[in-house]
Length: 285
Ligand code: NAP
Image 1 (tube, rainbow, N blue to C red):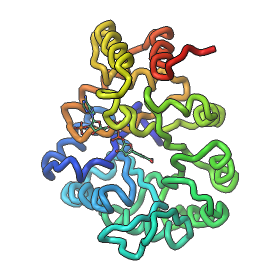
Image 2 (image 1 turned 45 degrees about the horizontal axis):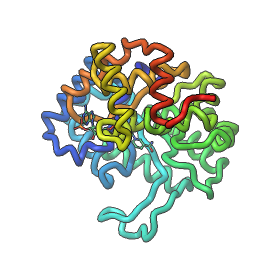
Image 3 (image 1 turned 90 degrees about the vertical axis):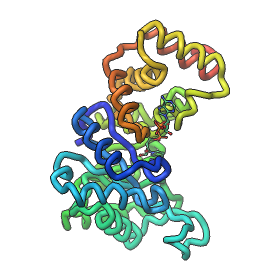
């Protein structure tokens, strides 16, 4: 189950250059503060991030049962580990999915994933083949639940018609708010499924966006609610009624703790719309 308002993502783990002790501390701080969902993908850090995280799990196996491990499959690109990928592409064949899951399990050092997501929809995806492969992975005990990421509502319905999906992990932040208008959030609300929001701080861009009026407004609201700018940006996401789970990207435990207070902020409805208007540059009709 996707428990809690927040998940922690490890896309930036290898870039963050943190020691194994710091990583272990980050994981423990997350778990101690109610963040059990750990978001990975086979490709993060050119296939190195899961292995790095796995070093902690291998030295502290008791941590595994305290967390809900998410990984993703399907994106292929060329790097040192994959010289045969001449062009970036998506491969959602049975072989590709099974190889990806086996690699993730080996790298993470565990027997099963709690949730596997199709990382991106492919124009060539065969949903029957994907569903059969997912059911096989479930029977083998390698993956408990399935979902997708970056799917349009019709793509979600297409795969969901073959196998029940748990979530659609989508980009969502004050700066990337198209999910409000393209039906993605409506659909998950309709199915009573929780969306996962990636890059909730727009990858850090909310702190230096090219919208000075947004910077000013976020600071004014931070002052009004006596919280930080990032907490306002996260509270704006949590104000949506679809019960979004935010996938945080920081690799700093101090920042992680600071962001959590966002879940206790109830943004006034006019403040929520003021942010939307400022980002979009026009008021709602
Ligand atoms: P994010 O929270 O929007 O951005 C994180 C970045 O913002 C980090 O570089 C972080 O730096 C910086 N940051 C955080 N607080 C800050 C502050 N107060 N001041 C300045 N900089 C600050 O999230 P994200 O990393 O882009 O994405 C989160 C997760 O979503 C990823 O780890 C991954 O699991 C998932 N994701 C999924 C997809 C997909 O296609 N499904 C795509 C992208 C990401 P520090 O580390 O220094 O704090």
